[in-house]
Amino acid sequence: MSIRGLPDPVIEPTFAPPRAAGILGISRTAVYDAIGRGEIPSLRVGRSIRIPTRRFLTTFFPEELATEFDEKKNRPASEQGKQGVVSQNPATLRAVPEAPAA
Image (cartoon, rainbow, N blue to C red; front, side, top):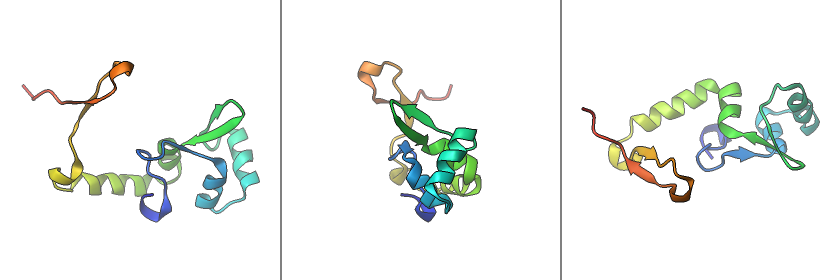
């Protein structure tokens, strides 16, 4: 969880519509109706509906999301963890060091 009880997209990439109802303070039915109208971003996995966390936060909480990322950028490097790009090979998904700037 991140600020204001919002889900962290790194830890929880998607979540269920009832959770969105709690976050937005509306009924589950209203969430499902908004998903049907395309007002809330969603993915269908079989019969299950999932809400992509980052898109949800960008849509409904852009200021909080920007503030949280700014706070993470201002942390010392030792707290931020290793920065790098992810390997494009799905069989060996791992963090690889960034290439030095030339």
